[in-house]
Amino acid sequence: MDVVKIFDTTLRDGEQSPGVSLLPEEKLAIARQLARLKVDVIEAGFPISSNGDFQSVKLIAEKVRDAEIAGLARCNIKDIDRAWEALQGGENPRIHVFIASSPIHMKYKLRMDEEQVLERAVESVKYCARYTSNIEFSAEDASRSEEDFLYRLIEAVIKAGARVINIPDTVGYAVPQEFGRLIRNIRENVPNIDQVTLSVHCHDDLGLAVANCLAAVENGARQVEVAVNGIGERAGNTALEEIIMALRTRKDYFHLNVEQDTTQIMRLSKMVSKLTGMPVQPNKAIVGKNAFLHESGIHQDGVIKERSTYEIMDASSIGVEEATLVLGKHSGRHAFREFVKDLGYELDEAAFEAVFNKFKELADKKKNLSSVDIEALINNEIYSVESYYELEYVQVSTGNTVLPTATIKLKKEDQVLQVAACSGDGPIDATFKAINSVAGIDNIKLISFKIDAITGGTDALGDVTIKLDIDGRTFIGHSAQPDITYASALAYLEAINRYISVSRRQGAHFVEDED
Ligand code: KIV
Ligand code: ZN
Image 1: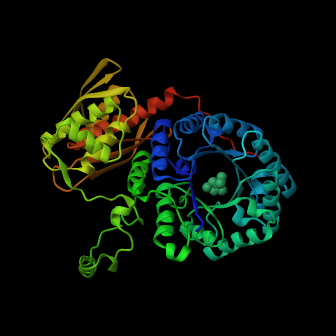
Image 2: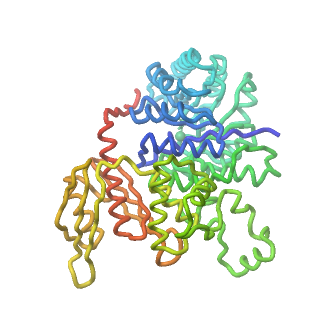
Image 3: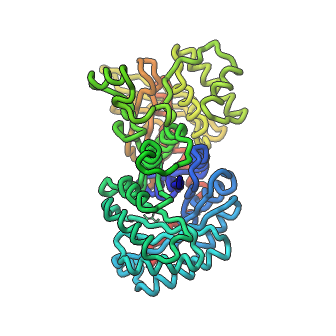
């Protein structure tokens, strides 16, 4: 049976989601989880686009060994050199070059004609071949391109050395039968197409990305480009979890294999949601909170009698575990270490100690600790950024008859700063105002504030995610704590620390449109 390769672009196209910007260490954490899931290729970034992207691709190429690492480049020498500089430490790195092939893009964006585009594409692929034979070529906006030109372009870049040909539906314009037909036409009209893997990359503007990819696969595509939770430019990309589970669940129909460890899907989805600050809608296929819940009596009755009446997939196949009671305040280090290992985390000694101490504190306050609580503590630790500011304490007085007031004490790199008190419309407003005043940062706008109870019960951890606009850029912070004011203060500070960390590493330059 043929295999469909999974090329993940969460860290490149996914990060192009409005308002999302990840730090290199966060991208590395996601890349490691993608490798655990066993995706075939991880597109780690677009190295020329900023120093941050360059550093991320370099870091991931050096550290992640269980997947091919790809870096994106336009068809020019500078982009390709920079991509290779970032990728070269990897095991089997891939340069992914692209140029637009549709009349609209060539005329208005590139101001080039067909022959110029073809020549530039061939030169660029040949230039990549000096570095590696692992070259992917994308014809941007392929689905709106003239087919005869597309065939000529593909044939020429294959001759020049491309090993993977990617057909993007860049603006999410295609419909499934038409897109499937395009893939079949390419296979029938490009004489050397059998020398390469044919890939597809679909955007979800009409909600058809997954359907288009599946139609392409039925017609011979053997690589699908995806992003976790379907994030990405505008309406996003093809959702990784939907493609993998569709191919796996309907193997009887597609007669194709995917080789991923699907039990890693849920953790990956949560990690991406947390780090990007992009919530997953409850009814989202595969990874939504409701995806495996049955509300109607008839359905519940059916599932109790025989699961397959209303369930086509087993929740455990994507790594959803029952929240079972496993640890309590008498559990020791050894049991806790085993538990953390079973959850799939590898913590260094310092991180383990920090999480263990937090677990003990929490176990004193909350009786029933589930794996979900422990994961929240681990996530607090491993995803937190360098602490430029640390919270010494927060004290809030509030109620319907008093003016909500917060007192905050912060530590700034060994120096203790204090503010007496700030009042606000409510306890959270007062807390944030107090933090702003101690930190001396006033150009902050709160974009969103989200709070969730991690498990049921009034003693559940409050999981707070905050998005701030500072200097026109978005920064995310989150924290899970039993006390929601404390969690809010920590999340707010984390976003500020992220801003400071990014500003300190500045020097970023951003890609100008090519003309
Ligand atoms: O959507 C698109 O066309 C792309 C290419 C760079 C592959 O993201
Ligand atoms: Zn794209």
